[in-house]
Image (cartoon, rainbow, N blue to C red; front, side, top):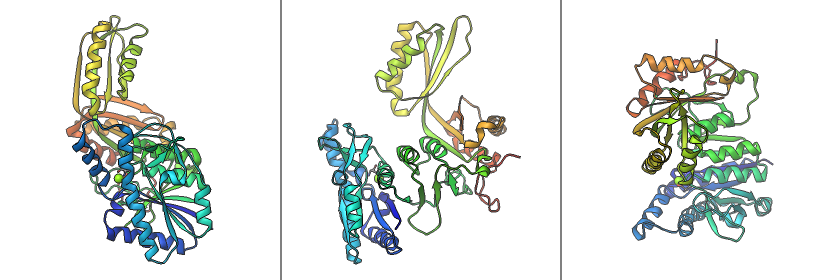
Amino acid sequence: MAIVVQKFGGSSVANPERIQRVARRVVETKAAGNQVVVIVSAMGDSTDDLIDLARQITDKPKAREMDMLLATGEQVSIALLAMAIDKLGHSVLSLTGPQVGILTEHVHGKAKILDVNPERLRLELDAGNIVIVAGFQGATETGEITTLGRGGSDTTAVAVAAALKADVCEIFTDVDGVYTTDPRVVSNARKLNRITYDEMLELASLGAQVLHPRSVEVGKEYNVPIHVRSSFNYNPGTIVQEVVDEVEKDMMVRGVAYDLNVAKIGLFDVPDKPGVARTLFKALAERRVNVDMIIQSAMRDDKNDIAFTVGKDDLELAVEVVKEVNEAIGAGGLTYDADLAKVSIVGAGMVSRPGVAAMMFEALADEGINIDMIATSEIKVSCVVSASEAKRAVQAIHKAFELEGDVAANDEGFKAG
Ligand code: ASP
Ligand code: MG
């Protein structure tokens, strides 16, 4: 008997009708002869509503109490879904994260899962029950309730699937799967049948909001096949797995991602000597500013420029820190810009192919779009452009790599040659 883990997000359980629809889908999976564990998020926007409630009480809620509050969202949806399944005549029970034995580190608001105890789940499955588990939450060794960070139910689902050695972890969402780019930006973006963990990880961290990045990391670590599919239809979605297929290795670019949450800070005329970069980035790290791209220009007259990007929320704090560092190291001043975007191409096959980056730059040049910064890894090239040009940049790049949908029977991404 196969073990199937299914995860339904907040929009899939936003109201009683939708919960009943999810219940029918779960029951179908069970009736097809599978053991089924279901992970659910809080109903609709209820996590946001809870955050809002806290804000009405205080600006500075204790992180521990925030977790206590937010964890209630998922407790509502698991109970209601269990009731709906029971009404359909199937044995079912709901369990909170702590009841399952989802052990996390002792960090509130963004705890990492350390371990999932499969015992209780196995017992319930073997007794013939469908098990509904609250996403996004766990408990520390001492029983403190923690949450995993926004969107964390995906991670609960993949971690539970790993612990049970499930055959598949199905992530149900409101789109048909993972697309070559955001279909709201490019209407003929194509759904991908398969994508590797590394590619998905890049896309997820670059702003494609289909899967929580941490869930992909867990999937990769434990080799859990993740099936991203629609909760509104039965179309096959996108399978995330470690693809070793020779044909797939050929593919250069699989997707184009964009991120509008980008701000840049530049520091001029930085003395070129050992320890300067350390001083700057250590100061930023100490204030918990998350730095993304870093560029240092070529040296001239024993000086160079350093530029880096941060999320817009961190800009104010980062500028404060850089001003201090500027004074301390005797650099020549700073500039910043908050109206930027990062546009990226991702594909495992680009490792061995020269010219991919040049194709991307050409697509931007042809559109008259200026590139502000460039960063690369083995499987991605990212360009910072002005925010107002981001959409046009994505469209041009998507077109240049021929990622559009109607290419006959080819949903595998751009192939070289
Ligand atoms: N309910 C949580 C959130 O809205 C977790 C999740 O939806 O995955 O972020
Ligand atoms: Mg949610």
